[in-house]
Image 1: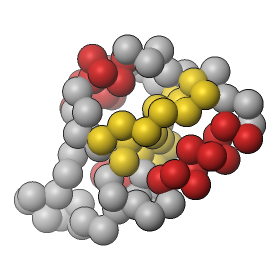
Image 2 (image 1 turned 135 degrees about the vertical axis):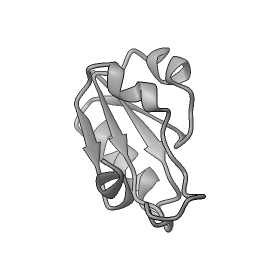
Image 3 (image 1 turned 120 degrees about the vertical axis):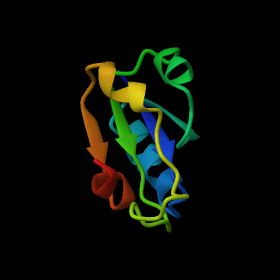
Length: 85
């Protein structure tokens, strides 16, 4: 099993990755704006959108590739990631 974590600047992103690995799953951290092709190249079973310091209401806030939602994968949002969802 593999999980892609999209990093939006959270101080806990590496902790999340470590906890996933402790569950015997592979995890990789990619930038929050990684193109969907780069995400799909890891053949993930799920995606986590991390937290971050930005507000989703800010027009300059980081955003994931909108095609991410076409991959038909479970997505967990934490803090900023959940607000984005």
